[in-house]
Length: 353
Ligand SMILES: Nc1nc2c(ncn2[C@@H]2O[C@H](COP(=O)(O)OP(=O)(O)OP(=O)(O)O)[C@@H](O)[C@H]2O)c(=O)[nH]1
Ligand SMILES: [Mg+2]
Image 1 (tube, rainbow, N blue to C red):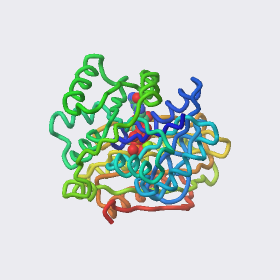
Image 2: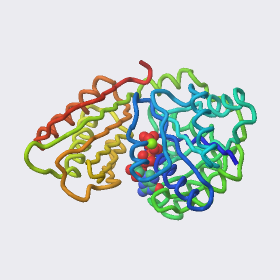
Image 3: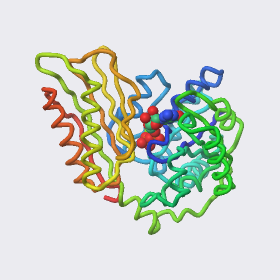
Image 4: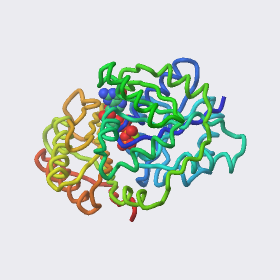
């Protein structure tokens, strides 16, 4: 089997977490699997890939472009994994991305006929997004929320650990009525619930190769994409003559960004902050919007003297404002902690730049 699946889904829906859990689950159940994190930022070792590797996953990344536009690079990567014995490879696309059904599934099929077996085109969604869609409160992101699901052969309702069994049934019923072409499964990437059904759906199922009209590049597409900016920074932070609490430090940055974005009247669907120290200990937290708590995914187990930090964010906020807010927060909080910063990469751009 040389199965390939794309995982689409909005920012923070759990694509990376699910790819990590699923590749581990499959590999543990006799199907060697790998994951590819696809990011628009330049360079290597962006947050998702670095986090997956720190967690021991069979993971790599394709950066600087959407996999929609680099079919050859993707095919080469897939071939490498299959010749290495992998039977299932999963790649995500950036969390506000649409059009991968056409650009990736049809692109690969047309350029490399018969070379890859395409699993159902898979879209992750979290209960909160369903709530926004159902109540008509998706605002500027309506096109992206909806179009991602229109593309799905398989919808994965993730984060089921956060809702009741009754709510889960309601959400699944609503999804089936609104997106009748797709099958839906409920999982929790956090607890592992439903990974068996998801792995069966991917390894046993096939892509429909439907061509839904998603008005790619049209007015609604440009409007939604025009709102999104991306921010990437990688730096090294060291304290001069003491040690410090890196968990509090990371939370301080995320809190400052959250407050500043809210005060400026914008939204930040996902900010990822990952840091590690030379001995290999690491911490990660996620900010998933101005109105939600900050999630600690993993904490440092001891105090630090120096850390490497990767911060990646996607926001519905103009590029310059986002740059000012995040760079300002990292500098101000670092100063509070007496940290000296060596920034080795920073990138901030609007999606329609
Ligand atoms: N409670 C709960 N949290 C989850 C689950 N899956 C993911 N999360 C959390 O949701 C947040 C976002 O998850 P990611 O996997 O980074 O989301 P993503 O879709 O890859 O996000 P982007 O890379 O920004 O597109 C993280 O804090 C995860 O720990 C789940 O099943 N349950
Ligand atoms: Mg991700």
